Image (cartoon, rainbow, N blue to C red; front, top):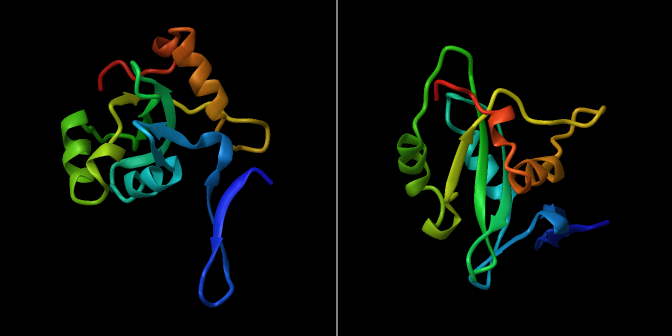
Amino acid sequence: TGDYGFIDEEGFLHIVDRKKDLIISKGINIYPREIEEVLLEHPYIEECAVVGWKADNNGEVPVAFIKVKNGKFLSKEEIKLFLKNKIAVYKIPKHFYFVKFLPRNPSGKILKRKLREILENNEIDKILVKNN
């Protein structure tokens, strides 16, 4: 299916993430879904997506796209502090982009492929929130 998962002691299947979304940074596997789930615990974050982006010689680094709830403001520093005690340091995204929207397919699924294309083509300004 293209998913990573495991079966627990009781025989239940747990899906961890999509194989194509796996980020490998300095030889370490990072699952974007884990980072996204923690980010969504923040009361000001409406939705988010994490993708891998090219690092120098170290594979990829996590990059977060965040849509903040209306009327709320968050800084990159506040998010880093929020994540600090919840996930390993190497999983904390290296870049945070505050966006107006996340691209979706007709069924509403976030298009991470499109987010990577936006980064690749240096078109990030098209979806950025100007005041965050």
